Image (cartoon, rainbow, N blue to C red; front, side):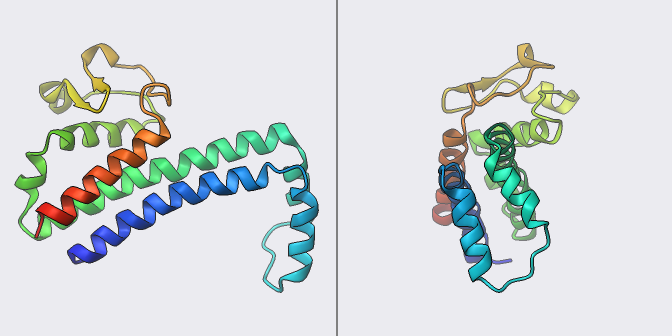
Amino acid sequence: MNKAELVGTFRTAINNCKLVYASMLLFSHDDMPKIYRQLSDAIDIPRPYDEIEIISLLTDRDVSKIAFSELYDTVHRAALKELFEITKYYCEFTGQLKIIQSQGWYQFWRVLRNCLSHDFKLQFNEYDLKKLPVSWGKLTIDMAMEGKNLTHGNFSRQDIVAFLTEVSDFIEKELA
């Protein structure tokens, strides 16, 4: 992987976050089950799921609200976790790990990645405890947060995109 590919991976992940938001809005439209049927009939593609089940999902507001919230979270969680691993690998491979580790947001990102891997629960190991507190934006993660859930109230989906954009900008401007 080269730098342009890494930056492109960030761009794609950020675009995915934005697209899942747009799809959530589009699919919440009252006519979506009807529109879905029309599109499904008009487009000749394999159908991996039962069409009646899809229509049922789109019609049931409570079920679709939960499903879209989970989808929204999944895309954001995947972006943060996967981009951390890819970025760390790139920096190790190119001999720039110390550069990225010297950034104030690096340990924040690492702790955040661990939290997302444990169902949004902050669980610190011995290494984490030595690095705390870690901060980015308005969120500071400290020992008092041990065992607590990270919520969208303290690190919103918009914060996630802003954070990833900042890291991407750093990579593009500062790394080789």
